[in-house]
Length: 296
Image 1 (cartoon, rainbow, N blue to C red):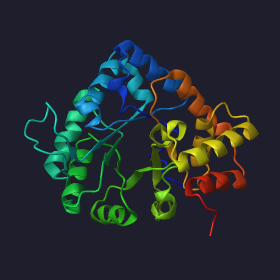
Image 2: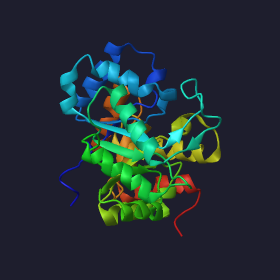
Image 3: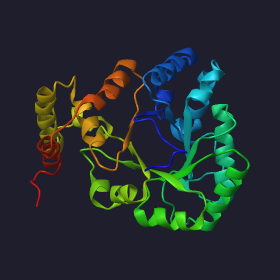
Image 4: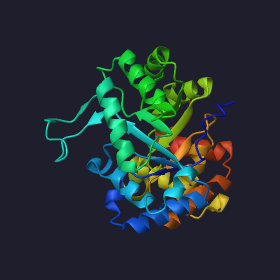
């Protein structure tokens, strides 16, 4: 069984595009409240999202109803530095998993989100210069000071995950990875097997393939749309997005899909996909449409 101390909601609310939604603080709050009503209490962020704006925009909305903090999990990520107006010392985008940067980033997230702690902090990307002992030291400090309750990683291979876990006494509870019919790498490279083996929570980003499934005319997208539309009719789904989420939810590692929309009707539709059960043949027909061939 997974740790009783940490459990994501079945779906996760993603706010990486909140700066693009052009919503007032009250409208952003309405979205947060609707997520909570739908049982989605895990809220995903990263320090860099929106050019370092998105956490602030979320915190501004949350400040209108501070009592909601007790009803949600706040998740953030760190370890990437971007070239923006806010970072004049950066000459190029790069990774930084130094102890100093991790602590500084987490503290900035706390300030922007207007909270005293993060429920989960992830290292955003594998860093070739990552010193696992230094990351572990940052985790220990943040945990001891009550600033972060749980830790994990994002886009890490099983080997990278195990390296960091071997150096920290904090259990790494999550690996946030890409999972979609257009990119099935983590289904076959051992990443999701590793999560299943070690009771690590996989959080799934870009389940809808960045929207390409709906618009692109490349052979893979055309094959997928045709199969997804057929299955949507078979299972009485409202749209092919629901079929995609059901396909992700069927994986035995139990991924938690991130919903990245600011449209309430789309959010509601995504959450309802948990009522759809695909047969193995339906699931593998999507796999076959993605790869362009049958199973070996």
